[in-house]
Length: 215
Length: 213
Image (cartoon, rainbow over all chains, first blue to last red; front, top):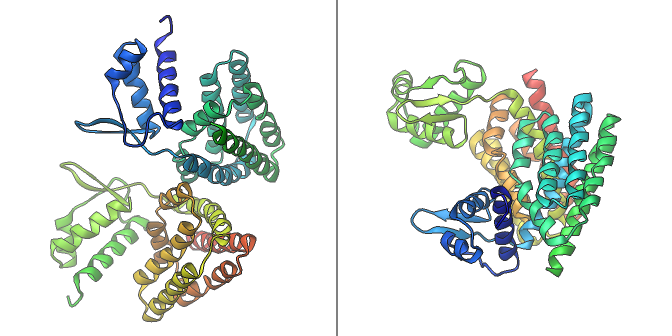
C-alpha cells in the first residue's frame, strides 16, 4: 500500500464505522486488531491508532484483558444528537455574534476556504476536520465554558463523520453551506446568527435521517 | 450534637460550599478531613462522606497522597450554566409535551407536592431533590438520550444547591413556580411547555446574577 499512515488510519476508522452502521459488526462484537491487520494487509500500528480514535469517539469500548468491543450506536442515537446540537449552536451563535471581532471572522473564513479545498480534493477527512473546527470556533467565541463543555460532549466529530459516510453529501455543498453563518456573524446580528446556525444543523440532521434510512 | 448523620453530612457539605463561594477556601486550597472534624466537633465519618459528595459534585478534587483540594468554581461557571440549561430544557419541554401521559403527570404532581411539603418544613435539601426530580422527569419524558446525557452533565443538583444557598429565595414560592410548567404539559402544548421551562430557568439565572452582583 502506498498510502500514508494517517490516511490509512482514517480509512480503517471509516471501514469499522461503516461496518458498525451496516450491522456487519454488532453491539458487543469484538474488534480484533490482528484480524483487521491480516484482512487489510496492513501493519498493526494504523489499526491500533484507528481503534484508539474509535474508542475516543465512543464507537467501541475496550475492557482490560478482553480487547475492544462494539458499543451500541443506533441511528436513533445519531438522530437524537441533531436537535440538541441545533439548540446549543443557536445559543452559541447568539452569544458569539456580540463577541465576534475581525480576527474571529477571519479564522472562520479560513476554515471555509480549507473546507472548499478539501471538497475540491475529495478529501472527506479534511472537510470533516475543518467543518468541526469551524463550529468549534463559534462555540468558543460564545465565551461560555459550560456551553463549550456541553457541546463537546455531543461528539460532533464522530457524528459528522457518520453523516458524511452514510449520506453521500456533496462535499462542495457542505463547504458552501457555512458562508451564510460567517455573513451573519460579520453583521454582528445575534438573532440571525442563531437562526442560520440552527437551520444549518437541522438541515444536515434531516439529510442524515434520510441517509440512514437508505443505508 | 443531636443531629443524625445524614443531616450532619448535608450541613458540612453546605458549610464547605459556602466557604468556597465566599472565598474562605481559595481554589487549590487543601481541605483536611481531620482538621474540619476537630473544628466542627464531629467524628470523621460525616466529614469524609461530605467530602466524597463534594467530589462527585466536582467542588473539590482529591489528589493521591495529597488529600482534597478546592476546584476552581466561579460564579461565572454558575451563571454560564443557566443559558445552557434554559436551552436544553426548552427543547425537553417541547419534546415532552408531545409524549406526556397520565403517569408522567402524576409523577410531576408528586414531585411538586414534595417540593411544597419540604418548603413548609423548611427542608432545603428535600426541596432541592424534588425540584431536580421534577425537571429530570421532563427531560426523561422528552425521549432523547443525548439530551438527557447533556442535561445530566450540567450537574444541576450541585449548581442548584449553590443557587439556593446563595439566594434567600422563598421555598414555597419556588415550588409554586413549577405549576405553570405542569399546566402546559397537561395541555400538551409543545410551544408553551418549552417557553415556560425556558422562562423558569432564566428567572433563576437572573436571581443568581442579582444576588451575586
